[in-house]
Length: 81
Image 1 (tube, rainbow, N blue to C red):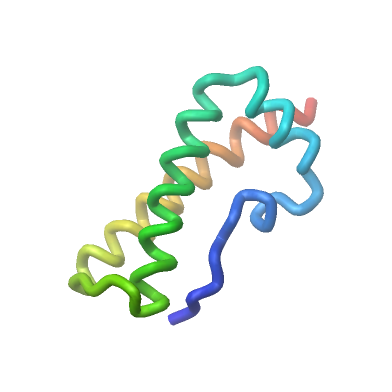
Image 2: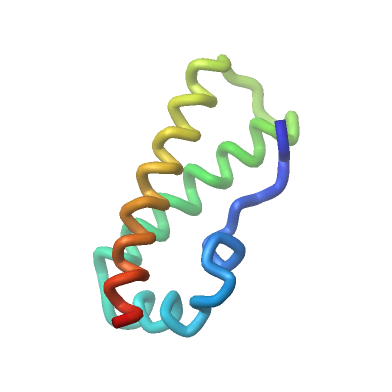
């Protein structure tokens, strides 16, 4: 397991301006971003050994993070054009 945080800026290294614009202009992006950061933070704490949980719950969180990043990726791609 890796305990490297997966921050949005690291996930989209070439899209800092797009992420900033979406934060200012798109309430749905803000909601997704907040959820992503909550889930991502929990995963990071689990992987770092700060929180204990079942493997099933950790996998559920990782799937949720992937789902959120997919939706965020779609918004980022649409905002690029």
